[in-house]
Image 1 (cartoon, helix red, strand yellow):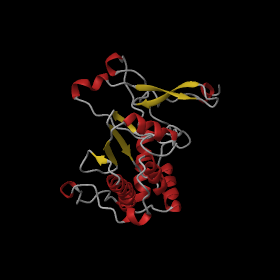
Image 2 (cartoon, helix red, strand yellow):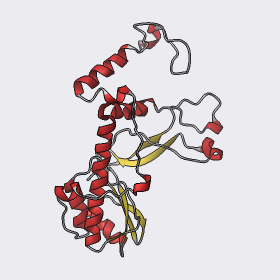
Image 3 (cartoon, rainbow, N blue to C red):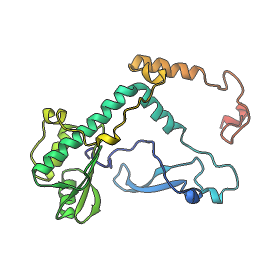
Image 4 (cartoon, rainbow, N blue to C red):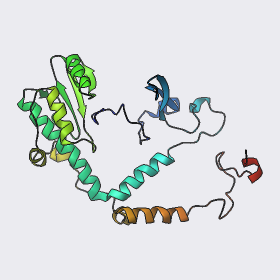
Length: 249
């Protein structure tokens, strides 16, 4: 499947954010199980979202609830360390300009966009959304189902000009060129564009090659407290020190 709006053919952990009112925070799920397929194309259940190490709502817990976000937080942090502020800006700019070029081509073909401004997502006004979805899925593309007259499309850093042209083909809206993408106007209103600096700490401005990145990760590893350098103090349930003989099985 193409990298448009959804990734049904790919599975990897990714950082996610929950937003809720304070009164509902203890009712948030510890996990969400989704339906997928296994290697034999049989129906399979898989964990689609995990918010905590222990899959239980806080209101039902009798002990401490541990979060399980360390891996995802580290992935997000290392992504920012490697790319730095300029790299992050260029990645975002690519997705935004591709979206602008897509929107312009669709508008030229008579397909109207509902939202005036955009970053990487547009909502289209169409006469027959189910027909659009069927044609898109036949081409290996997933659009967002909004209503019978609206279709949502989101692009990201993995989207290419070829992907955009595949989307345009669904609407019979021609093709876009690299030059048109580079000259596309920003879809972000001027009054909400960021002007302040970000990722200003030296760590985000020092390790932008593979060699530098690996050396930095090794430097962090060497600072870690492990069983071969010390004894881990008793703390959370995941930190209790077991005797070596107990760990043999």
